[in-house]
Image (tube, one colour):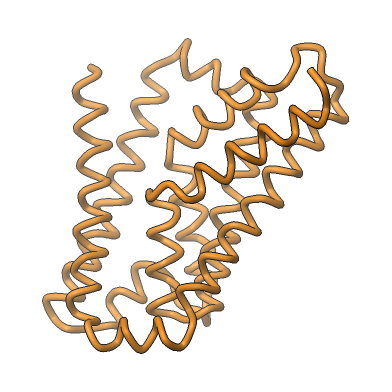
Length: 211
């Protein structure tokens, strides 16, 4: 397969994954709206670090191990569901108490590494990330790809993740967006809680259903 086709296909797949609503985008949005641009960027960097880890592990064939050892995938799914439910609980509690600091505490503060850790944990406990990068390598990367090409693909995925999450953080930390969020902060905080909890329940239900 031509190198340009391989790289352009990987770029397109990453862009589609970025614009598809999910835990990653919600985490950056909520961090940016409640903690500002720096919190959003730190959350995005954490997500990007996790994506880079998954891309590197996919190169090593770890995604295939999940197929061979489904219990490991189940444990990861349940851990991810639990973490999303915890974020949802914190957000809903903040909305109920009308306490913006509660949401900031759950998704990350711009003054601490919490935002980076939140992004990293959301990414690392997301089994779809492992399957996503595994499918990219299986579909687009030739079997005889050199270590240099594989390393370049991992680096490309890292750059794309940083770029995409930075765009999200910048958009949702704009003054006009922040002011709109402040006007309906309690409702928006509750909505984040419902989305996080809903995603967690969906992952948990899908995991149990597969038993």
